[in-house]
Amino acid sequence: MKATSTITPSSPVPRTQRVLATLISYVFHPIFLVPYMAAFLIYGEPSFFLGAPPQDKLRLFISFSVNTVFFPLLCVLLAKALGFIKSIHMTEAHDRIIPYICTLTCYFWAWMVIHNWHNVPITMVSMIFGVFLAASGGLVLNSFFKVSMHTTGVGGLLTFMLLLVLYGTPSMGLPLGLAILITGLVWTARLLVSNHTQTELIMGFMLGMLGQLAAAAFFH
Image 1 (cartoon, rainbow, N blue to C red):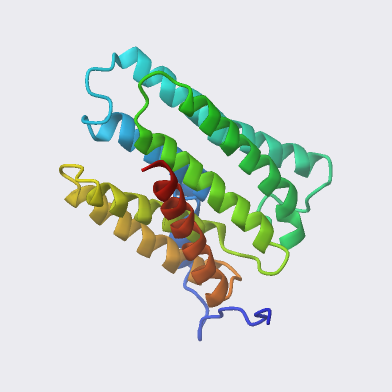
Image 2 (cartoon, rainbow, N blue to C red; image 1 turned 45 degrees about the vertical axis):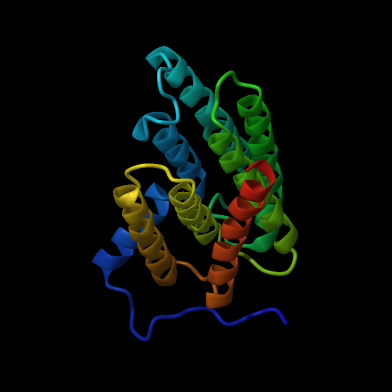
């Protein structure tokens, strides 16, 4: 049965909290979490790109970011300009169909590029494929639930960091702690400023988690 009730605070959200929650929602928007994870692999943990020239790292990061951020955002803006969606905030489920299709197409292309890039660790290949799987699942579920894209993003982020711990990646204490903090901040922010139901938040988180787990099972 489709959930219809929305989360409404017992009292109006103070302006300061609303502003902070909105800022958190933008800074840790799922479309930005993907290059954040890539940046951690390329620059944050030396063991993954040990010995790679700085220019190669920069070229890889720029290519990855263009495919996972610039092109999806361009698709959304074009869809809004052409009247295919009512708002870039995509508050209605039907507004998310075209952005979902554009985004998962860009993610698949990013995976193809990364998969064929010389000396890219399998962990990065698995990460972007997991993101693609989560976006694909979001498109399917969009017909029944307006699954939270934000919790899908943090679900994938947290699961990816946990997988890195299981793989024996060194010095993961701080990154894992930050991932947990970001997850809590984003979840709280969406409770305050979105019209998602608790079910939609949970389903989004599980979708992001399952995407990373499925990709890890396939590539590792």
